Image 1 (cartoon, rainbow, N blue to C red):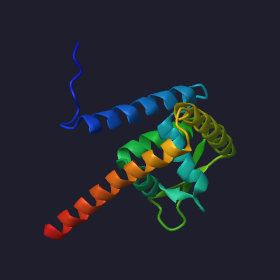
Image 2: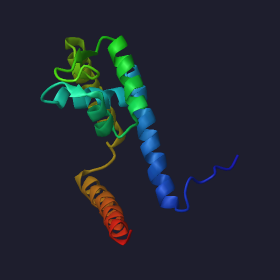
Image 3: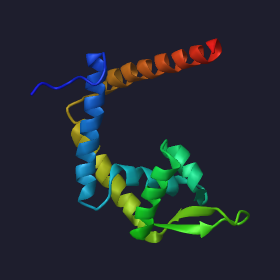
Image 4: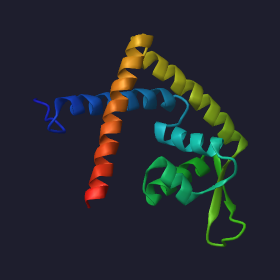
Length: 154
């Protein structure tokens, strides 16, 4: 069966396929500990926050819809990794904080993530890594410039 390309540019298809494959690989490793890349990202933001954060702030940091963040936090809370605290000034809002188990899970997941990514990128030497990072930065910079140009034209 022939694979249908996802875009009009084979390079972009390769980028998407690579990131998708990396995500599946890391998710597979994290599953051994009962977590996912999405959960790790949420735990990471909460672990590095100076204080408990609002759901909306976590949603914005993750770049996902509020409904998606809520489902993610519900699962983390159910597993005892996150707790919802009452907001000190807004009765309708809650703040999110890691539990002790959440901090432990975060650290273990970070270690597994680091090891999985070390394996995935192990064939790249320092020069390869620098070249790839430079090329990816050029693509991001070009997109950002095009977005800025589009904002000025609109």
